[in-house]
Length: 182
Image 1: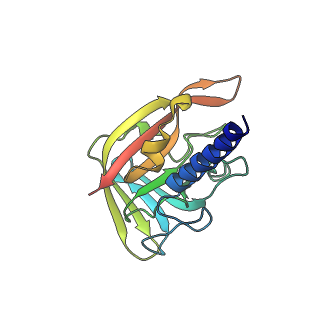
Image 2: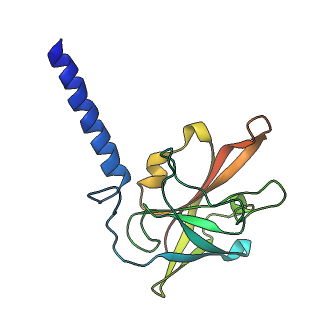
């Protein structure tokens, strides 16, 4: 019986370490992910939607979830700083709101972007990362594809969508754009 208890503890530690390693890419510590460059993304552009938005850094919130851009900055999207810098190999994630209580926000028209559309991310090192849209998906939040968003290579743009639940004041789905380097 005691052996079973220790086996469960060791197994739980192994699983936790594996998940942290996977979510952190090629990093040795969660606080300091290794990056191919020291650049940061500064601006997102989607010409087909006439979208030009400044980007801010987003980290992890105290509850273990990814931070969201503040509602007070509805025209700003956020780059998840534990994902790769757009243009570098690996997964890169940008998050934005679909709307506020009173007006559309930065990703209001995101669900309308078409396969093959161009996406540009301007970086602090003067380079521009060029992507093309591979697909757009609307999926229930309960079925969020964590592996495809945070571990698969390419750029991911994420916002809310679908029906709005007036009881919880939340959208029931996420809209996710999957893009690869052009």
